[in-house]
Image (tube, rainbow, N blue to C red; front, side, top):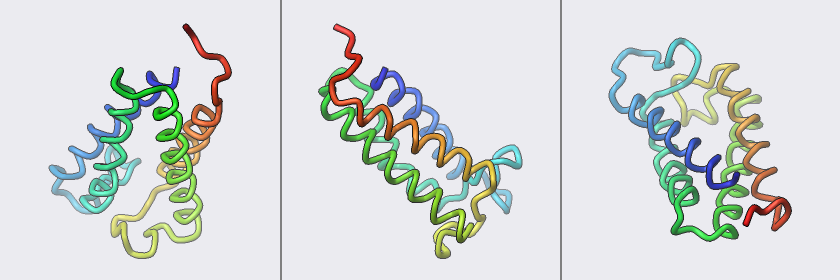
Length: 124
């Protein structure tokens, strides 16, 4: 379950990252919902790479869970900071939307839950 979540989230982030680099219209909001500006995409690159690695068979389950925990903390923190300041201290000029905040809290909570399972519910 952890690897599947990591893989799917990694692929989704890869698509969002790509759209942030090629979308030229300002403000850069995909379908009017999500922030996809270049700065946001730069933040997504290492997260995408980590998630794709965590979802691969090369990663141990322990590493996958550690990466998910780190991603969860990061996403939850961005959601909390974005709730107070939608431009996250000026880092995101197109500002987070309410959909972005819900997405960050949802992904953060899911990743934290999956990352914290530490051996429970393991399929052989």
